[in-house]
Image (tube, rainbow, N blue to C red; front, side, top):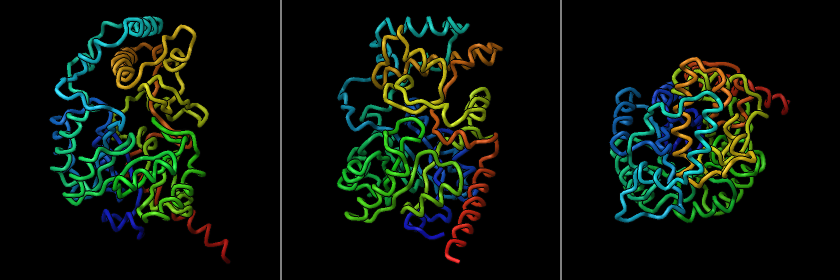
Length: 378
């Protein structure tokens, strides 16, 4: 296959796989797709990022891959203030902490269980730490650097271009896409509301052709389609509307290589497309996630209301580690609280498979769909 993005990155099949799990990234790239490591969950320090990327470099057999960060463009630099998870947690209102403790106790979760989230760590959302993450990422042979929350900071664009690395950004409207072009971004990911986690309100079917048309009128850069895409036939449909490839995430959660807990994977496989909800309960920003007792409680009358990012994320991160430990210990009731950022395409996921198998199924389904379209011209 030859599209603009294929030539830019040196790939044959433009299936982009976003994952927080390095094993998924490696498996997808080695199977013919393009893995993108998501160092965007707030827990990755520059030192940890080095460990993760060193491992990827050692196992990916020279195949191309990318890196994704989430640096909110409206997040001010804190200058000389050294922000860590502990200094931020100390700013969380007591009523929110008590609300979480009551909720967990209601489901039989021990709120005193020690978890990794109790360790003090730097928060990557702040620009001083983010620039160190960028510098570390560019020490590795990544081919694409993506920012997931708005316009990338100028240092990410300038440093990436100096290294010959393409820069991408996720957008939810044509206006966002045009602003990214002005900033110097090389790849646009048009993400519809069907997508997992942070997403807008416009469907992929409408957003994609609108963004493609707007982008082509200014500067013809590759556009990737994102939002609810979990099959090869959907990939073909997106490319028929002008996309150079597809950006996927949810389909990799229930894979053998994924580090998502087995209990969450079971819920994902059993879920229907209608079992997702957009809520601020996970991160503080509106994000699509699996419907559960957790987001229902935050939307309920007893809720103090979700906090803004990154405070809500800190609450959620700690609570979910305790919930998962409780489930692992045999507390079935706590399963009702389990959630995950997942898109509406979850209803098309039918089992737990290897990442290589998922890539192969994408290719086969794409080929079948392409063959069907040939019949239209007969």
